[in-house]
Amino acid sequence: MAVLRSLPDEEKALGRMSTLVCVSVAAEGTKAAIAAMAAAVAGGADLVELRLDLIPGFDLAALIGRRPCPVIVTYRPEREGGRFVGDESERLAVLRRAMALGAEYVDIEHDASSSLERVPGCRRIVSYHDFEGVPRPLEQLHRRLAALDADVVKIAVTARRIEDNLEVFRLLQGTDRPTIALAMGEAGVVSRLLAGRYGAFLTFASVEAGAAVAPGQVPLTDLLGMYRFRGITARTALYGVMANPVGHSMSPAVHNAAFRAVGLDAVYLPLLVQEPVSFLEQFTPLGFRGYSVTIPHKQTVIAALDEVQPLAARLESVNTIAVDDDGRKRGYNTDVEGALVTIEAALPPGETLKGKCVLLVGAGGLGRALAHGLTERGARLVLTNRTVERGLALAWEVGAEFVAMEEMGRVTPDVLVQTTSVGMHPRVEDSIVPAGMLRLGLVVYDAVYNPLETRLLREARRAGCRTVSGLGHFVNQAAGQFELWTDRPAPTDVMREALLAGLGAKD
Ligand code: NAP
Image (tube, rainbow, N blue to C red; front, side, top):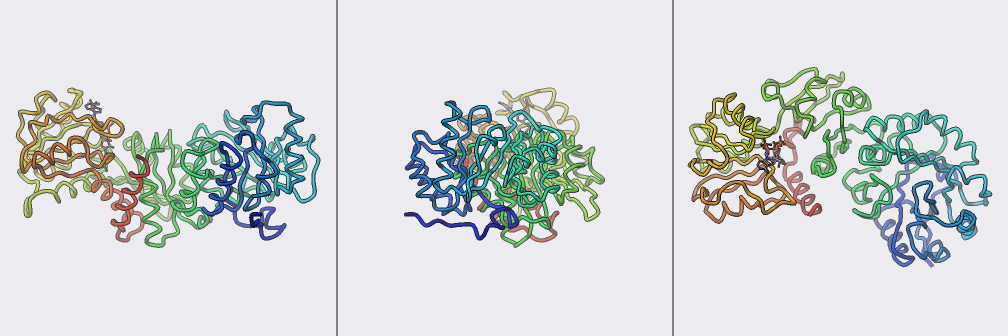
């Protein structure tokens, strides 16, 4: 018989304690579900949710008998977003049996609550799900659910925009009742990560990556490891990356590792932002002290800032925002310096970019920033871009020569700087630089960092070029952000390790 880890006492179990971490278990059968429960507890979960509708052919007595911690038993019908499609009385009979077998919690959908009588010792989570959006006002819904003999109220809504999380936070802050409130979807991930800060009864996590039972669930190892969920309090400084899309970003892994390494009470969040100006206005007062900004917001975000560093203003590209104690927002660009330092490190000892012939491939956001940066370093710039008008406009802006892409093989540069997304995962066999122009001693920089060795860099290495991947650039720009936010040296080794580990995990 498995050892049952019980919650400390009745009062704590009813929510007057720090927010619990619950892993939702879905599995291909009873044996796999028992293994998943054990893995969840070994990984640090306080309790597990058995999603019976996602465990085919489950053996309820075995599941409850072998639970290693308190369980929530959920048997979600299709009408509330689950997979159970049979007879309602059959479903309720299973929930009754779960209570009789000693389950600590049972999840009862709001419309079934009056059909399921209370059983002493088993707490009732009365739940409501909205897969379309946020029903308003949430407080009214909360009152209605609480009146259904609920020990814990659960409201799961769907975030269509990141601003929808604010409704969830307001609800949690305004109630003393044990409440689970979360926003599903990628835009709602912050409601799961900040559940403790706002006093939620619990937050759900998945047992591992790819095993989420609801949109936006974060894997347990990320929740407790990368985000240090249990350490997030009202005092924790908030940071994050404003992006759309954001799911692929390596910045949370890199910055959270840095905060942990220097012992800062800070957390860095993935922020799926659609409208940067209104986002900044509404979220900064929650306690945000800084943001990374990436595609597609680097330019549009400028309208929301109180001050912009001259370089960032000239480039019309802000990748970093620092928030002062008085809430003023200052914009910077750490991208250009981050890339230039990396490229310079690959030059032969004692040499600089001054006077060097640099072929810049790409006139997108990064290409434009580097065109300015390289020109300011005194490089002789030749520029190429797939869209000729864009390339020509940039060449004119910085006083560079322009060549059509199919003509780039005619240039004999000292340094080749590749800033397009060509060669990036998953199209790793693509390259737009003709192998014939790669020669001994040429410095070749590729901004792409996933994979670390692109086809271009592989061919360049074989041809005897001095190659540089986008890894160092990424670490440098992130280190620049860290230093602007914290006024202390960035732990760059830790950041590099976190990036490498993250890239490995994403493959
Ligand atoms: P962006 O503004 O969207 O620009 C994309 C550039 O790639 C444009 O020049 C575009 O040409 C070109 N391009 C896209 N697909 C192409 C294709 N099939 N053939 C030829 N050219 C193509 O993006 P960005 O912000 O400049 O980023 C570009 C790359 O740099 C991305 O891979 C990004 O991950 C990487 N990056 C790396 C770091 C780092 O820290 N290492 C930092 C920033 C960016 P058109 O003008 O013709 O569309």
